[in-house]
Image (spheres, rainbow, N blue to C red):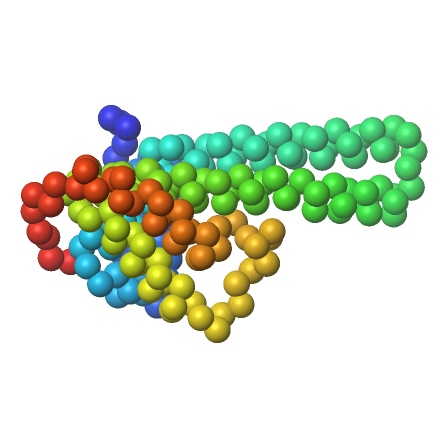
Length: 186
């Protein structure tokens, strides 16, 4: 992304999260920074967020939301034209909205998986140990023990178990990209 104006901002909060916005804006909470035990783990997290931006996930999500909204509006207009009662039309629209969310949530989970894969490659290409993504997510899983994980079908993220398993598959092949030319203190 040659025209991206990358900006990384740290927010003071115990929240275990980071996020990315279009154009190269990345935010990370101190809670997540404190969870990372090495530069390699932090590189995996930052690589993941950079991957969201470089893969243009927010634009893809926006496009799919526009399509879903268009289909919803069309369905509503068809029911109005067929003189479907307001109450029945509202129920149908609520069901349509619920059904439409399924693919959207899976789409978000797919984006998370793609960002994990690309992020590991980015971190390895920058000289960091890509296996650190695994230890980071194992720590994240432990930090979230006891908290109710959203029912997987309604989650926008893959489960921690799924994420760790996928990282275990992709991190070792990325090792050849990891040169470890430098060490930077966090």
